Image 1 (tube, rainbow, N blue to C red):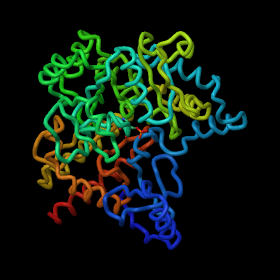
Image 2 (image 1 turned 90 degrees about the vertical axis):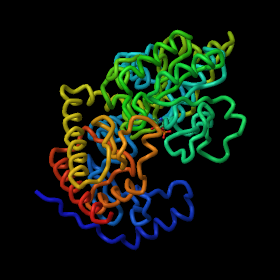
Image 3 (image 1 turned 30 degrees about the vertical axis):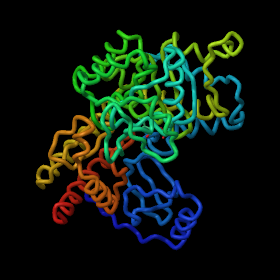
Length: 438
Ligand SMILES: Cc1ncc(COP(=O)(O)O)c(C=O)c1O
C-alpha cells in the first residue's frame, strides 16, 4: 500500500466560490493551514474522508474541529436525523429527544446531576460561568494561561494565541472589541503549576465566582496532581470548579476527562464530540448550582437566564443520542486509543529520526506536534514552539492528502487501519521534505 495522492488543481468553479467567500464572508473564508494554496471549498464528507469541490479527497483529522467524532455522515446519525425531521425541527418546548438525552448524559458524566442545553461550545462555557457566579455571588473568574474557552468576552483572554503574555494574574485580551472593564473580572493563573495557582486562590478567593479549566489544556495533559489540587483548593473555598470539556467531553472516555483523569468538577461545559456535527452544547453539573436555571425562579427570585431559541432542539438531540449509542459499543474507545497511539508514536519517531526537535503531546484522540526542543508542559513551554513549522508541516501533509488543523490531529471512531497506515506513510514523507527545507 502506498499513498498515491496528487492534489488536483482547483477547478474554475471552486476558484469562483473562493473569490465570493473572500468578498462576502470575512470571517468564514478559512484555510486549514496558513497558506492560501490550502484554501478549499468542501463538497462533502463521508466517514473519515472529506472531498473538496475540485474532487480532492483527503483523510480528515480536522473533523470539523472535533465534532465529527464518528466521521462524516455517519449512517446512524443520518438515519436518526432523517427519521425525526418529519416531526419538525425546533419547538422551544420540551421534547422527547432532549429529555432522553439528558438522562443519558446524567448517567455518563460523573458531575452531571442536571443538564441545560445551548448551541455552541462558547455558549456552554458562558452559561456555566454565569451559573457559577450566581451560585457563589462573586463576579470574578480565574482561568488558566493558554486555555481556550470559546469567544465570550471574559474567556477570550490569555488564550493559546496570546503573543505577548502579561504579568500574571493580569489577563491579555485576544480580540479587539472586548470592553476594557471585562479585564477587571478575570484573573489568569499558570496551567499545571498548582503552587502558584494556590497562592492566587488564597489571595483572591473572596472575589472568585468560578475557576475554569480545560482538563487537558489544548493538547497539554494535566500534571499528576494538578487537577486533584485544583479540586481540593476550590472545594475548600467553596468556589465552583468548571471543567471546559468542549474538546474532551465523551472523547477521552465515555465519562469524559473527569472520568479519564478521575477528578469531578462542580460544573462542566461540553459540545463538539457528542453533536454528530449538529449545533448543540451542554452545561451540566450539581443540582445545587444547576437549579439556578429553574424557570420558577423567575417568579421566586434568584433566576439565572440560560435560554436560547435553538437550545435543546430535537434534531441536535436525536443526533447526539445516536452518537452516544455508537460510543457505548463495546471496545469503541480501545480501538480509538489504539489508532491514536499508533499515530502519535509514528509521528514522534519520524520527527526524532529526522533530527527535527518536536514534542508530540496530548492524548490519543487529540494530539499535536509542537516544534520545540522543550518538553511542552505548560503555556510558556508551548510558546517556545515554532508555529511556522507547524503550518508548514500541515501544508506538506495536505499535499499528501492528509487534512488536519494547523495544530491538532483529531482521531475519529471511523478512521480505518488503512487510513492510519496511509497517514503514517504521508507523515514520514512530509517529515523528510520538512527536514530538507530546514
Ligand atoms: C476547549 C474549548 N472550549 C470552547 C470552545 C468553543 O466552542 P465553539 O467553537 O463550539 O463555540 C472550543 C472550540 O474550539 C474549545 O476548544
